[in-house]
Length: 338
Image (cartoon, rainbow, N blue to C red; front, top):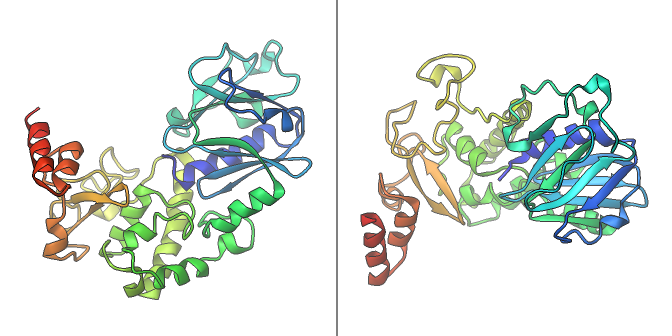
């Protein structure tokens, strides 16, 4: 699932590509985007990003809302639209750009979001169209519905506009009143918008926070430090989609930029030694997502460490084994022997 850095990056790119122009907003062949006609042919004012939500602002106070979810992705290009392929939900196209590509552009360009590493030489200003596939939501909101969404979301470390979404005090207040573990609270988009599983795990490690600490037991000074630290980390992730959270002095290679496998302290490093202390990184599920932590540097208790999944076991087997009852243990044993 894209985290806030990617969503803000695509908002900036699509603003550069389409803002100030009339757009053809076309539904895909599966007809799941039924209200495309409400914004088709209208001028795009700008693209907003708040947390993991995109809002394409058109005239008449209408917003095309896109939430990429776990599987959503964009493909962009220039020149005529290609034949529809896959689970195409929607197309955004500059009005009048369906003819042959302009000579200055060279060969038609085609790039998918997940493959964009920041090295693409193709400028956003030359993009004629983008296709959307697999989003959790693609629908048109009016002003009231868009504002209701904003009111539900917590502050965003990458917020550009003044107001609640750049003020972390609401997040601090909500966390300090909650009994839920801080690792769960950081992933709650109604508390902080844009923090995902990678940044959650890495921020907690960088500040040596026990991920199971109840929010009400957190120190306000630590919360402020986590928020402040998240801003440059998210901004750096906007540049090339690489989420690098390790400090150069902690990396085995001591190189800059980070070598492959050195980008994260704990995320997806379960069973490997911590770069700082050498202790094995642990993992388990928490609130539907996999949590990673270092038991020594993050000062977790023996009881908390015992809840970690067995090293070397698959997530499927570990989840079965974590379920209560003898039947679950038998299922886990069967999975382990597959």
